[in-house]
Amino acid sequence: MTLLTGAYRLFFPFTALFAGTAIPIWLIYHAGLVERMNDPLLWHQHEMLWGYLPAALAGFLFTAIPNWAGRPALGPKSVAGLFALWLTARIAMFAAPEGALSHTVALAFLPIVALLALRELIAARNRRNYIVALVVLGMGLAQAIFLMADAELGLTMGFALAFVLMVHIGGRVTPAFSRNWLKKRGEDNLPAAFGPVDQAAIGLSAAAAASWITLGAQTATGILAALATIALALRLSRWRGFAVTSEPLLFAQHAGYAWLPLSMALLAMASLTDVANIGQVHHALGVGAIGTITVIVMLRALLGHSGRPIEGNRFDRVFLNFLHIGAVLRVTADWTGDPAHFYYLGGVFWSVGMICFFIRAFPIALSPRV
Image 1 (cartoon, one colour):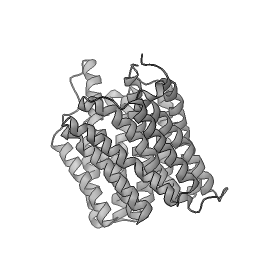
Image 2 (tube, rainbow, N blue to C red):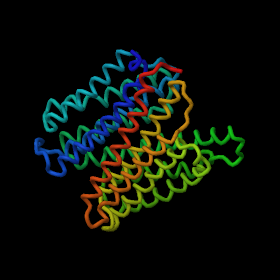
Image 3 (spheres, one colour):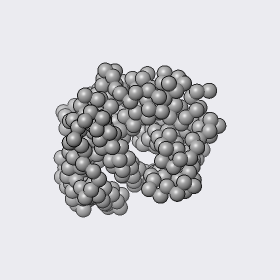
């Protein structure tokens, strides 16, 4: 079966389909139209951070690791088993988000993904990417804390680790892909090579994330987040994003990365002032950075590994814009006089964007490699 010949074929379309349906379900609960769950907020928080992101990571890791490490890709049975575990966890968490059995099934996925990834990386002595698998393992620990000990701490830890992962992966692929594209067009002015600015951005991002986890939204966290904002924005400015606007998939990578300094700016404001709140930070990271970065990475991987040109079309521009519009509406909602309307409108835009990505991705996933 074609869907089982690569982790990207199965995980990427259904990750988007899950996100595109989970948000409308949450909005129905938020509006009070249904009251079946005891704690729908717990389900919403858990599923968007530990339901959506791990599936995207699994598809990405088990597609990228064969290239990173020169190891064989996961076989069809392993891909099917991983996907079945992820899907079972989604059903269990919806049926009983506070149930011990649901938690057990949900908690199994990330450690398995991390250990499978580490096995391949260690076998290939690919030390450069150990950090990716270790962060995934850390996200599994954050999930356990969220479900079994301290929901607020677990949520903070999960978002902080996801932020670090996006800084790392986005910072690797965004300038590299833009550089290659510009080189092919004879451009001499290329994205800056990795240097002190990148090191400072990574170091300050890690420090801000660590402070957020250990201290919460306190003064020290705010100062570090403000410094990380400046460093990340400076880093992004050196990648020549506006030179690749004619290629929507490339420009979308820069736009997705821009949510990372915006998230840190909101964390600084939430820590140092009352202008922003932590909910806005969560949504800037989750709906903004994680949502847009994962979608563009998934789409590029689908196109490339299926033998198709890695080029965007008008449909891609539309649904990528929908994701950003949805994120902007949700993050800015708390600065309006009637935030609920913006919550729902932002959720609709973002969900439609995800469903459109599924419509774009699923036929590719079903088709043999060109």
